[in-house]
Image (cartoon, rainbow, N blue to C red):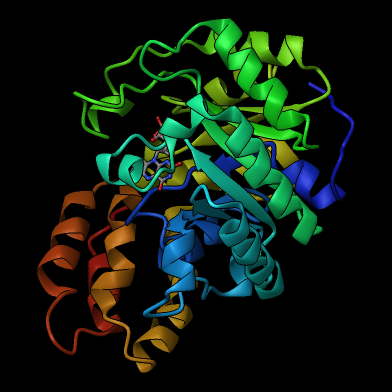
Length: 331
Ligand SMILES: Cc1cc2nc3c(=O)[nH]c(=O)nc-3n(C[C@H](O)[C@H](O)[C@H](O)COP(=O)(O)O)c2cc1C
């Protein structure tokens, strides 16, 4: 589906496909690994709350520019705090700022951020306006199709209309509602049914907006089918658990001449980075725990996982653990 690019052409293309923000999963090491598979995919950070950045015990915004394009996902509902964090993120070189209006965890509701903000469209609009006033990079919103009993299509349209009136043109919509009480975050990713048609309808009714779809998408074929109806696709769990999917994306979606990147290539390309991180005192396990799913379709995948799981956490574990694990893979 063609849409007028409203950002730089780089963002326009990146926005066609993204790896979702996932707490504890899409860390900087994970993103560096994913970047070895795909140049063009937009990678999201885990959600970082505005208060955590402001009262930082450590540098939450630290990342390697080689991970770009990266969108920083912020959690919060205080316009001044979010504005300040957006400014910092732009200075640090992030490609995009995204506001989390989709995460249903209790912790998040108490702090007034995440999915509960769907019921407060005016406040979300205020937050987005504040961030936009401070930065030139795009400010985008990730949301659900509804929360609790606020799940009509009219409710969703009203939310999108109010927030887009600020000038926000880019929405990523997880195609299921969230129950704010009674379901765990994990259950909220599985139990409420997916409704892709609702997201397609949103694109038809707001043709000037950049609408990306998210939820339960697993294959290149599914991704290209969704792109007939919406502007972008975001994949979460499948990209993490089976990162080889990402090796096909550049060729399938961005550049027919781009090579397909295999997991062996991606792992080999990680080795210099791993050595550099180890030399700075990072534990091997903090990096390789994101690489366990690399070889899902290969013989030796189980030994790969087992060797890493049993050895990468040991004191002094080094690059040889990865090299030995790689030796189990039969191509
Ligand atoms: C472990 C995990 C952590 C997540 N953390 C976040 C988060 O920090 N912010 C967010 O907006 N969504 C978060 N999500 C939701 C994903 O971004 C995505 O919307 C959801 O998994 C549905 O996409 P999928 O079916 O492709 O996985 C998380 C999902 C998982 C599995």
